[in-house]
Length: 164
Ligand code: SF4
Image (tube, rainbow, N blue to C red; front, side):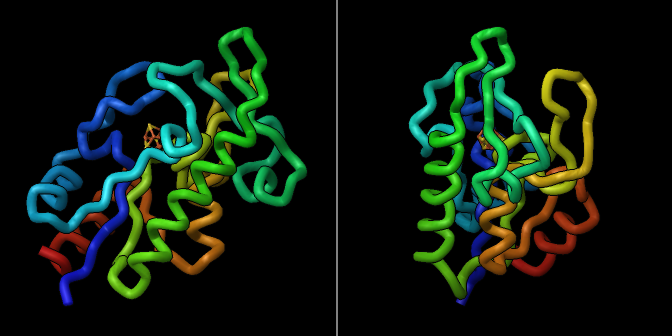
């Protein structure tokens, strides 16, 4: 049975990014064209509009948000609490991943995003990166799905060789 890869939809060229743009990644588009990619945007699945204000995790990372000890808040001056949207989006992404369980080889997720970041996210209120995962990445990872950073080109190449 052919394996599938869940991908951050913005990596597939879909304009779902907070500013209405995308983060097109040619390897992910190749998977999509071959019918092997399942594109998901957790922030849209969580009910947020596009474009939307950028948001960051206030303390810790996605794991801290999942445990109820941190929040996700917009950082464009509006300080809106969008934690529930981020949690809903993560749960919806997990729902799709679970429906396809057994067929999912990995999830390629957009690095640095408060939803999809695998190794790095932004610190709250400063323009600096720190180690950590986004909320959806943390939930998928905690349920045993292999998550791969969009910046890990070696791992992505390996996946493509296995799957295509
Ligand atoms: S990084 Fe994730 S949440 Fe952000 S636009 Fe891409 S798919 Fe959506």
